[in-house]
Amino acid sequence: MTEQLHEVGLTVNGAAYQAEVPARRLLSDFLRHDLRLTGTHVGCEHGVCGACTVLVDGVPMRSCLLLAVSVQGQHVTTVEGLAAPDGTLSAVQRAFQECHGLQCGFCTAGFLTTITAGLRQNPEPTIEQAREMIGGNLCRCTGYQNIVAAVLRAAEIGGGDAGGE
Image 1 (spheres, rainbow, N blue to C red):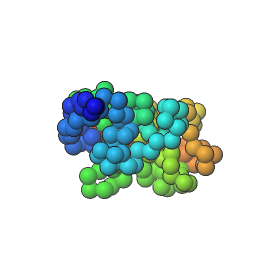
Image 2 (image 1 turned 90 degrees about the vertical axis):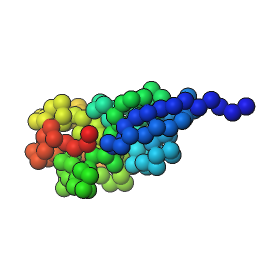
Image 3 (image 1 turned 45 degrees about the vertical axis):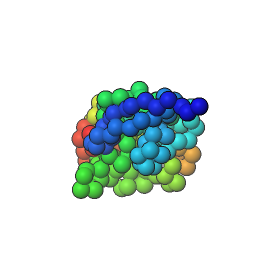
């Protein structure tokens, strides 16, 4: 017996996609395996770590908790979609680079998408607001100081124009 497939149509990083997927295909798996966008990482598979965070119509969402069919007709931005089409890094990406906001890099994609959405909501955060902005993402390497510095630096250089769709 073969599993029934369901049609899903969505826009990912500005490109339209139509696909047939099993009803229980997670968005994270659809992005990584079907579209080969491997920047979205899967850490805990329970929505706790934030490594799989993508933007769905501009809102940060845990892709390991979403079914691909649930984003029918929506716009998804992954870490690959944050830079400009010519490869110019977004303000958040540049700030991460300048402030050394990453070490192993596993959690970085989730931080970049989360911060991008956060700066759109609050383009001039205080240090406390920057900490709150990243509160749902876990990093095992950095100690968060450079990530907080990157949030504040991104606000300085780009504010609400953080990149992505």
